[in-house]
Figure 1: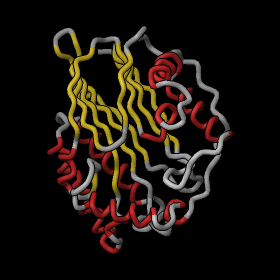
Figure 2: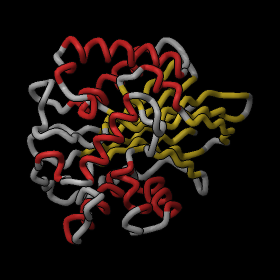
Figure 3: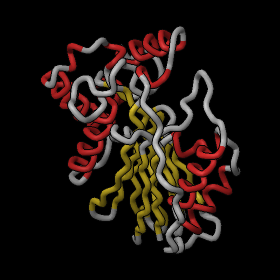
Length: 278
């Protein structure tokens, strides 16, 4: 199976590493791909448990490392991820995370896809946690052109306490985070290892050649929030010109237009992974 990989991952703050992680590994004929979106930090200061990472950024990176290490050895399953969350929970407590209120503990959305040959076709099993996306594009499938996108000059937002959210919205978000850590609401991943079993699981049969695109909701704002183009048009753009072109379209719009409201950050970390399977 031919696999071409194209990825982007861009944060929005100058001195605060992004809280998104994407990755992909091969295990024999199988491909394991993931996108992880650490939930917006809701503390007064961005760095609380670790000196140079938000707790959300640490959580996303830790899960990415676990998937890369264990996914190289065995097929993905919620039980495998549960084991990883137990390891991360122990690391977090040892690092001093227990001093943080439960609503400050890290939360993440994610999508994990395992793709393997099945006769003349490809079998894909997808685990979705909250609002990361995964889309398929097969029309006129071919390897993307290698012409690099012209990216706008990188600009950064100013981080504000509680990521800019104020009362009463902040109190509602804190309560939501407490529910998520208790595993009583939604399908997010948390330091509660049982959350690994929250996945919405899908199975699909793909016919190569085909494009698989996954990423965080910061990138899917192109079609689901700003309506700059349809989802189908966005996927066609990625197939023809690659993910950097889609990211450039997003950032150009956010740089020139007033975006965000009381319930939405002006812009967000944006990450994506594009696989061409031939």
